[in-house]
Image (tube, rainbow, N blue to C red; front, side, top):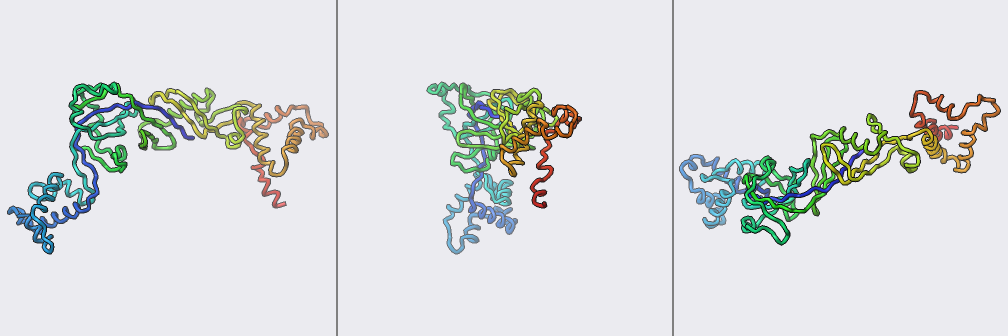
Length: 378
């Protein structure tokens, strides 16, 4: 059984000052970091005596094809600006980590406009962000053209300060997914009021962990939700489908006429509900419960159901007209009159045989008897 809960959620937009560390693919920087590490390990004493590292690199690494000292200096200054080496030309912790993992995280400071899902359950999810022009950040009037007011210098949501990275949540505008670590966020920023954009989410329960699909524009994210009781959601959905639902075994009793032939053969059915409220999760536009176990609601449905199951197997050896004739003979006991059996109705007879077993109609004799095997053996 799979439960899918769909809803539209509002998006809140904030303008914040952040310092990010963005994953970049610069193999040449890894080469430089390795060279700087080797230079330090081979010349520790010289380093302590303020080694002219620019001259050192010129002699050691560019001996055959000399480079201008300014060229070397610019590269080293860039590494220092990105906090990969310190003022003494040694690797920083970030530099050592970058060299070890062969991944470079380049710092980027600025003002960013971030879009956050604003929902009681899923409020801690960022779906998009982009750099913002500082002039717009400081603009007093706001965006009147789109009827959006800006509430300035407000306290930002606490969850923003608990995020360590935005991996798999924030694809860059180029469409290329990269790991983006958050170094720091200002405690206050701007909040855009009257913002009306929405995102679609689908909460899926199928085993553990539960999954949350978020669709925003052309982007789709998948997250795992760990701290929600699956049993509670399943029970609520089944009870909304039918008050007679068997919660212990997750079975829905149903009338014969409310099923298709394929559903009766598989003993499963998919149900859809609209505009339902689930405790702890909130309101959903649609609830789809797939492959729910079903069985007949009453005796009349059970008889019709059993006939379908029987014919589905026996039709391999006969046609429907002949089968219906035999079925009628069995139900009306015409073939048993010569035996002068007690006048017991077929209903009473079946109930007597099936006493204590309320699921007797599930017995599919042709399958149990393996007719095909017996016929082939004979």
